[in-house]
Image 1 (spheres, rainbow, N blue to C red):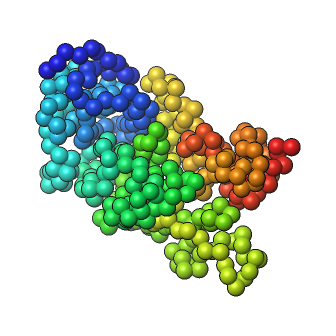
Image 2: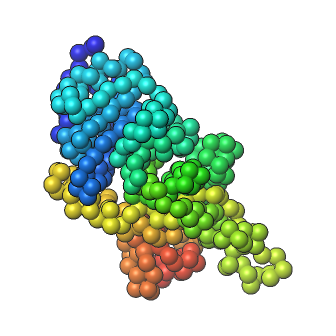
Image 3: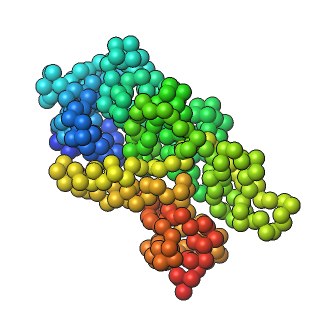
Length: 376
C-alpha cells in the first residue's frame, strides 16, 4: 500500500490510496447522510449496503454521522481493498462488513438469503441500467435506493437509440434535458419496480456537474405507473411543453397553434416514457432541513429549500436564455421574472438544475410576455 495523507470530510478521516475519490461530489454524499439520518430517526434502524464504496468514505460517513447499525462496504476492485480496510478500521467490527464482489452478485445473494437493507447506495461509474432490476431484490419494504449515472450523453438526448436500449426511453435534445435525464432514471427504476409489484417514489433528485443522482423509496404497494410515468411533449416552434395522456398520444399537438390552422395541428416532439411526477418528497426534504444543523450540514439547507419549492411543479423548466430568445429580447433577470409571475397568480421558483432557469406552471408565452413587461 502506498503512503497517503489523511483527508477529512464530515466526521470521517480517511486515505485515498489508488481508489477513486471525487471531492466535488461531497454535496451528494452530504445529502445521502442527511436522508439516511432522517430514515433512522423515523424507523429506529439503519442497515446500509454501499455496493461501490471506493475508498470507503460513504460507508464511514453513514456509520459515523447517520449512525448506521450496519454498513456493508463492497467494491469489486481488488487493488483498493487494503485502503478500504484501513479506512474502515475506525469502526466497530460488528458495525461493518467488507466484501469484494460485483454489485449484481450482492443483490442476488441478498434475495436468496432474505437479507434486505434500508439504504442501497449505488454510486456507479457510467450507466447503472444493468443494476435496475436486481437492486430491487436487496431493499426492504419502505427502504431507500440512492442511484447514480455519469453517462450524461446517453440520458440527455444525444444518443436516443442508446437510451432506448438501456432504459426503454427515447430521449430528445431540448432545453431541459438535464431534468429529463433525472426523470428517465426515476421512470426506468419505477417501471422495473412495477414489474416486480413494487412502487417507487422519489425522495430527492440531484443534477450536479454532469452527475445525476436520484434517491427513491421502494414500497410493496400496488403500482399505479400510469399516474406518474409517461411522455413529455416539446413544441420546437414555440418552445412550450405539455404532458399528454397515454390514452391520447396520437392526438398530441401544441395547444398554442390550434388557431393557426385547425386542419394542420402543430405536432410536438415526444420524449419518454419517463417520470412525470414529483422530483422530490417535500415532507422528507423538510425533515432533512431540520436535521442539517445537528449534523453540521447547514451548508446544504439552501439546496434543500430549492428542492422543496420545485418539488411538484411541471416536469420541465425554462432556461432564461430560451425565454430571451423566444421573446427577441435580453435575457431577463431571474428574480424579477419570478416575482412578476407570482403576482399574476402563477407558481414560480428557481431550480437547482440551472442557475439561469426557472420552474413555473405558467405556459411559455405567458413567461415571455411577463419577462418583456417586467424588464421595462
